[in-house]
Image 1 (cartoon, rainbow, N blue to C red):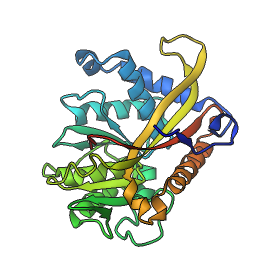
Image 2: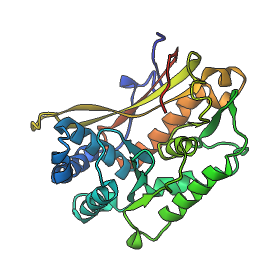
Image 3: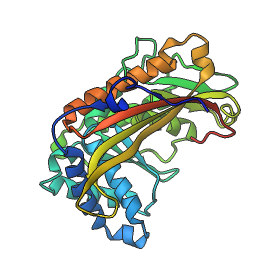
Length: 307
């Protein structure tokens, strides 16, 4: 396997640093206390580890390190009601209210998936996606079609744009009147949900699959990217001492054939620089001297890719 490439190579500890306080740890601990109060998680027997990971990811969305987070640790029966109550509690908590006023829940009913989204970052990300021919900014996704061949889309399908417009309109509601949860239509298809998720999750590359070609990525070289956050916080065992906590912020891939075909915006060096710029600026705004992000790239072939 190729040696992982770090965006911060040459910088001490291969990390991008920012700020002057323990902000991640303080907000994360307050979020975790609210999560522990949810009786539904006890009924689901959600482990302490999963509650902790869930709390970290909610914190990253609230602090604007990431636009969105897809919950894949547990699946409650009434996600809309449960997560609306949780977000309301976090907005009422003096320790977290300023951070969570811009966070809302998106429910995808076909698969039962829940996303938590930072409305401020999302409102910056969606505009411009209607035209893919303009020069992309660092956080602009490239949409890769998985049809009879793999290639870049010149324009998004109207159905995907329709969903993005609906999400944008919801996110643009005045904060004081803002509902806590938005549900996608019951007829949202898999082909629409995959690229929508990529937009919400800050991916540089968004796949647009078709149900007939789900194996297009199997057995071909793929560039895999992984962004890992490190910050100082309490140990997993609830002890007082502080330690470095490592947490994966995102993982995504891109067919190597695309950049080998001359698409420079998707070569590893360019994508790594773009990710470095995105997280470097966001960490600077957050202001936590213990927080850093490392970006890793590796090219490999896998038997199966899940969406």
